[in-house]
Length: 285
Image 1 (tube, rainbow, N blue to C red):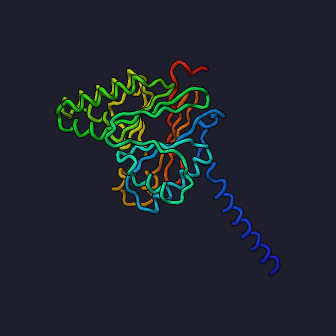
Image 2 (tube, rainbow, N blue to C red):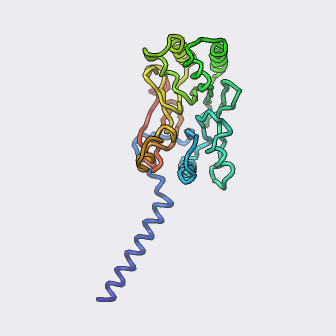
Image 3 (cartoon, rainbow, N blue to C red):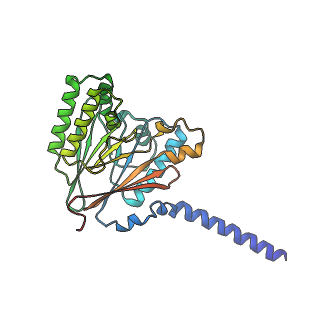
């Protein structure tokens, strides 16, 4: 009887060890268990978008480790940061200073540089344009209720950058949801500037707007998609740590010839939302 009990104990312990090993080394493969990823091709490009800003060190490290695992699994090529702090952001600095294995290029805003673009060649012979906009500055001017020369200059600069963009896919990245100011209770000048911003992005074929602080009612879903990056600063009011984990995280993007798929992944490694943008004219190819 004792031998049987001893053998059962050893078997249980070995089983537990095996479960822990499998979860540590292969558990992350279930991150994208949805059927949407069945359409992934060998030439698809993967990259990550993340909202930076302040996080407790433990959560910051956990986020970076999860990004590392996802980047390794899906062979992500770069990281896009929506932070208005640019290269001075704490998450980016922690990744470069601490012994992190997330050795990927980080594309982010550059203070004082206005609008600019990163042109990325895609594995299937196409290209992707990532356009960064200093939306923080535009937001402040919109809130002031005056359509001044600086705001007009910024919108003209954005027009120039987007006009030069020739990528098959074009996304705009900003830290603020400018479309919020098309609401009826905003100043007329602010609503006009927000409409102009939207018209510019539509005119020059922007497929997606990635915002750090949320997307609002002003975005026309028929023209392009507006997606919010999970934001640490947006959930500071939450008192439950498990709720914060659900709200914090990052985006994983998969870019193919005909579609742009975005997965929202929370800090627990769960895919909580999937958005698919189809390239017009290529849906049936």
